[in-house]
Length: 241
Image 1 (tube, rainbow, N blue to C red):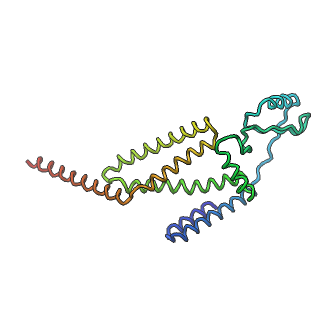
Image 2: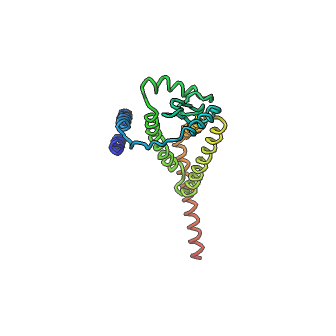
Image 3: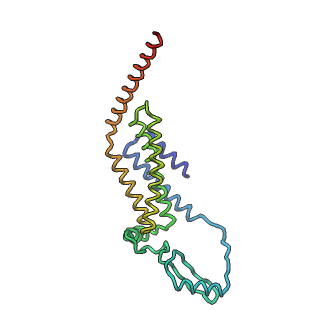
């Protein structure tokens, strides 16, 4: 299914339909989402093996978790003297409001989008993966294509070496920012920091004068080739003497 959808998008892009082509690609993405939801609903897994614990261990676990709530686990006891006892940690993923500075966004999305349309967590991840794949894949290809247009052909190795260094540095900086924000606040703030970096890069890229960059690169190539020819001429003259 993914191969057919990808082939259809490549075909539409190759025909250069313009804005109608973009609408067709969005419709294909929606078809992919619908198909993925059907496949997710029909997916089945093998019956999980149920493990049992002793009543004494169950009572000890309940006692321990009665004294603390600062954890991300959920426990439900079925059967035995502790039947019906349950606990959910304050930082469990199902707890939307965890006291962070951006919890309002999660609450708003749950109340106005996910819950009204019945979109499960698994489907949210599928939607996120599709859009991230479309955006990040295109951004990476566009970055290399744009960079190749802005650099002189006579200095390709030099500039692409610098390009690779910046890519590795960005990976380290992004990981560092995420770790600092996650340990200081929570994972939602950490993701927000990465979003800010992406938006900043988008803004800086939009300010690049592509035509001027191409002109400067061509001028640099012309000077480099002229200097190379002059040096070659001087060498040939000296050898003839």
